[in-house]
Every structure is written in structure tokens, then in C-alpha cells.
Image (cartoon, rainbow, N blue to C red; front, side, top):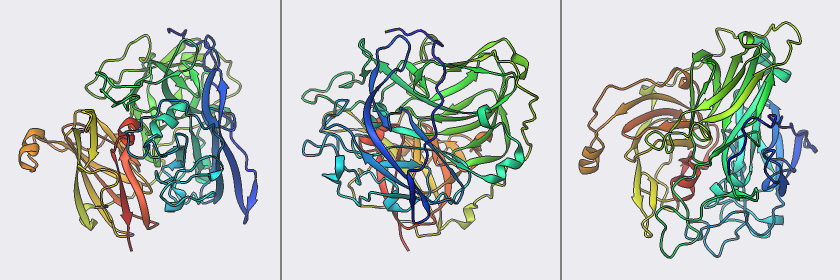
Length: 511
């Protein structure tokens, strides 16, 4: 089905208000529901999952250091919206098909509020997973101002729950930003990007088997999935009318597998001011921004010189990234349109400051431990692609046990054939470098033979990160401090089809 582009306005995602207070903290009750929503002018209403009747979910907006409490209420029906593969670990036939738990991606929270994959629960908590399950989550927000997002995280079905619509934005505001006079109010917009495919009746299409199909397994997990329709804030290829002035956009890649390498058809630059973990030290002027699933970018775009023009935000990232199929310029090669058509409502006094924040570097010589961790592609017993972290599965014994407060360096050694966005719960890290190496030599000998110079991270990656692109044939080196909490957390690939099919491991911070 071919849908017309730029016929629907970009929706503004509403900000949810607290339900009340508990122990002096703002308290939210947020229901996860099934409902119908119109995603394009020419589509019948689509049955989706979301929060409080909204897909994507409403934005939670908090102040830095302000504790809030959230009760995520599973109000979903008993039948899943999408096909569940019961051969996937954690989604076996004896498990409820519909279960969920919510993870605040990038949140610095205690383990029992993190949304651990095994901490799932069903409607009214009739059944709960094997891990700790609590009904009210604490989010202390003792971290830098930034754009986070929340999404489903139940083991074995994260790809399905997020694709169905269980995701939303979470903004931590730092009062210090007011000094910068950045674009704000109606000149600050959230752009929540996802890709979807549709059946003729407007329902979601999600594949039920890989290509070639797997005998004896139906429905089956697939190694990745790329929808041909790009949605922003829950609309397919929307447009946004803007004034000829500066705007701030908080961009979230909420897709299951798709990378986006974004540019403007006008050739104008992005002024990137922030990344996963908040503001960069200084703005980065760039003609393109590459976002893997789960990565975020905080940017300023200046439309001052473009009055009367219609500008398309394009995408040219191959799928899978970086060696996969090129984009179709008529479909996934376009994201949304900006129409510089509104009259200027007043003088634009907003600013792009030269200095934004101080990024204190972590030093390798302070690291307690250096770990070499492989990203490997194997096949499972059904001969399906099977991607693993360090050759281990979710239920294998825990091998990573950092000491609370310690600094570690991780070398992510990618032996597979695509880029994996690696997300580590709880911590923010810094990227030190990437270096090419001989993959075949490593597979034969287990030894690293570098084949080129180490390269520093891109300028717009030189801030605090919670998700890093580990490219094929490269060693991606990151450094982090494991604080402020001890306990059990996951780390995983954020291509959700990979995460669900064992590319996820627990680690435990110990005293």
C-alpha cells in the first residue's frame, strides 16, 4: 500500500500531569491500553497499544533532582496484537502471551525500578515474572537534563510490544538551561521516529517468519524488520509548519531495527547541542545526523533564510546498517516535511551558545578492569540467525560483576556483519575510540590484529552516552563508572529483534 506523503500535520504529543502525590513526590498512574488511532489520512484506524489512549505515550516532563513515582498499569487484553514465537527464550508456550514491564531508557534508577526483563507482569498482576516485580517505580532524576524515553522491556517480546506502540518520551529539565536562551515553548518540538508496515485494512503488518522460512516454527522471530512507512509522533510522513526562525528538536529513534542518517533537502545544517546523556560541551554543526535505534539527538535548526520553502528531512541509512539495502527514495528515504510558511510572530531572540556544559573525561589509567567482549553471529537449533554477547545467553551465569563506584573500560569486538547499538542500563559512558581489526584472524586465534589507526568518536558522540554504535570489523572502546546503585541490570543490543533472541546479558554491580 502506497500512502501519500506530507498530508497530515505533525501531532504534538501531550505532556501527562501527575495523578497526585505520595510521600511528597509527584505520583503518576499510567495505563497501558489497546485502542484505535488514525495514523494516516488514507488509512482506516489502526489498532495500537499505548498509554492513556495515546500512541506514542504521553511525555513525562520532570525537573532535575525531582523524585517522581509511577505506577505502570497493564490494562491490555489477553490476546497479543502480534504473533508470538514461543521458541524464543522467555516467551515459551507456558508463559502469558501478553505481559509487560517498562524501562526508563537512560534512567539512573535502582534495580527494582529499572524494568528488568524478567520483572514482567500481566493484567492486575495475576502472573509475574521470575524477577523482582514492584507496582510503583521510583525515578529520582538525579542526573543531567536530557531526553530519555520509556518503553516495554518484557523478555522475549520486547520487539512486539514496542512495535505495537508501548513507548514514549521522558524529558529531564535542568533549570540552568534557562540561561542559554535556547528556543523553547512552541519552538521546542519532540520528534519521535519509528517505522511501520500496514495491511490493506490499516492494521499493523509484522512478519511471521524469516526469509527463507524456518521449518516447524511458525510464527518465528526474524533477525530484523524494517517498515516502509516512517512515522513521526504517530503519523506517517507528517509535515510541520514553522516560522522563519530557530527551533529546537528533541529527536528519538524509537524504531526496532532501523538506523536513520538524516539530512535536510535544503542542505542546511543541524546544530547539535545534546546527545543521549544531555548537553554536549559545545554545539556541533553537521550536515547529517546518524541515529541507531534508541539513540537521541538534541538539535537546533534555523529556518530563518527559508521562508516559503518546503524542506524534507531525508534518510539514507542502509538497512541493515551499514551494509544492507539502500533506501527507497520514495518511502524510507523520507522522514517528514517542514513548511516554512508561518509568519514570524516576533523577533527571534533565541541563541545557540558556544559553550554548553562541562564534560569531565574519565581516564583509562583510572580503570579497575578492561574487558574484551565479543559481538558474535551464530545460528540456533532451527538454523536462524542468532546474535550473542560474548558468546553467552541470557540465562548463562553472570560473568560481569563490576565493583560499585569502580571505572571499567569495555572493548566491544564486533565479529558480526552489521552495526549493533549497545545499551547499558544504569550508567552513562564515554566513547574512547574505534579501531579496525582482522575479524578472520581473531576467529582463528582469539587474538586481536589491528588493521588501521584508532579513530576518535564523532564530534557529536563526545558527550555522555547510554547507547553506542559498535560497527562490524571494529573494536569500539567505552569507559564508564558503575554508580550510584548496586544490583542487577541488563546490557544488550538495542535492535529489538536481536535483544529478544538472546543478544542480552545481565551484569551485577557488587559492593
